[in-house]
Image (cartoon, rainbow, N blue to C red; front, side):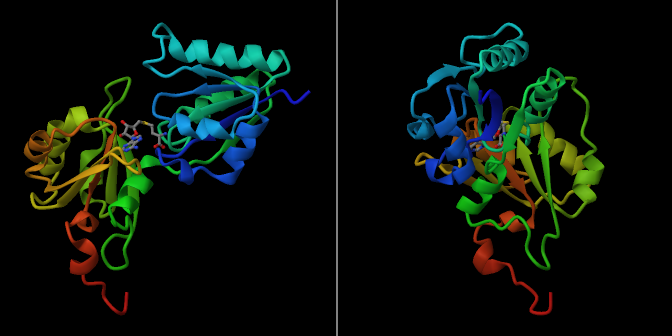
Length: 247
Ligand code: SAH
């Protein structure tokens, strides 16, 4: 019996960004549970498989997480190899950690497989290096959306000197802008807003902290999108940011 759950990151959308390990898991799968943000083209790697859509728009509105947990458990108890396919990386705002824990507590064999997270892909596809010698010495990934409405430590984010990558931020642009300004981030801090990163329909909107909500509105920015906030997000940064030779 090869009963097992692979918690697999499908990457941000471009099917070529799938890892070889993800491809192997898809080949072995009897059942694939697929999230909304996964590009269905990656299913071409499956052989004989049952595909179940379990995203928010997938028709399991009531207690979806519990439903997904139980579905995975049921199939593994039938001896099936299950692939739980998630957008980006399973453990970056993807509930991979909690699903793995829930399944392991019930004796299920679980393996996590990285995917390229949307923040990395979005930045790279817009030629934004998230770290850059002499400019940005780190990256902070945050979500603007929390279940419990707990607040981010905006001051730490504004003063930390790292590039900020914000997930699930489209509906919260005004709040993000105001909080970072209040926390002392400079008004002309460059911002890049990247929609549908890595897909043919990718769009990018360059702005500044002060103007980002207006520019996003004019651009009709829609989810899924990530925000990159920091000096590295300057429009023609590759050409314009002087990298100190000694850095
Ligand atoms: N696990 C995923 C994130 C899931 S949270 C990952 O690692 O990428 C969902 C959020 O991810 C979206 O609201 C959006 O902010 C971001 N996202 C996912 N796919 C995206 C894409 N192709 N382009 C831009 N943002 C994306």
